[in-house]
Image (cartoon, rainbow, N blue to C red; front, side, top):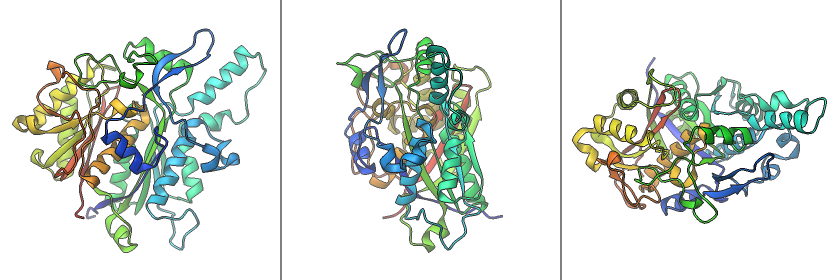
Length: 416
């Protein structure tokens, strides 16, 4: 079976800035941080951490109260993002004349409905109640988001969820891409969502000692990837979605095409649960290039995984230097988690959207707050302020997860 071209016809995002997708990209391009200081009244000890939330997300306005009430926060964010991508693709939520029985959903989430389960624990152990909500299982299941999306949009093809830590949604996008390219599905809705503000989740990340420090005055610049003074990552909630479509199918219906997805590479470090390894990342990068029919010279921008951890950032730069060789010094690299935070299972989808918009708008967003580059992260063209009017042909988006799972997505700009 011949391989088909894959068009990206829809983009949807629940923005931490509160605006639409163009507003999101303009703010990221300007280096504006969405990180704020989160204080809770949790017992026995409140959370006081830098965090990225979506405070202007009105779930009932987007989904309606009955539907929203059957979802945990991660599924609400995901379904709303999926609806936005669907509308952006010019597709109707009403049942169309064309059958959708082989159209599918591939979704990523690292945590699933953790908030639902935490609420149950509080009901039982803090409030002394005898039972939890009868909706707890369907609220908490990891495949809730893709199930709701499939039902609401009438998609009868595959409906699957991927849980691969921080690479969850990147792998979901890659697997969706393969189904469209093979001809198995003409349309796949894909992306990811997570809501990591559960008390137990935040405390678990604190215990790993990889969380950035910050207070009311400094939290906005708490996440500083590749910086000599970086202190760690910043968690955030979010949902992001893309519509991947058979190129000919998209053209036939007159759809706008944001960019073309051309490659997907995966690997496993198979060496350590939390310590990344350059060799594994090199294999994923090379696999994405080969899968997309690209050479290292074709890539003009890389959206780095860049979490601002002491160990992770230098390993990623080392991998890039091995793959791109002498060209590394001229390879534009930025880590947008410095502004929108780390949404765990949703991060890959958010960064895929950023990468697609960079190609569409011919502009590169920066690594915010990057003033002094760590010597261990030197050797590439670190973008520290937004660059407009670039000549971008192709770009990669990196996602490297605990467990050693690596995923790289490759995109190509389309002629305007």
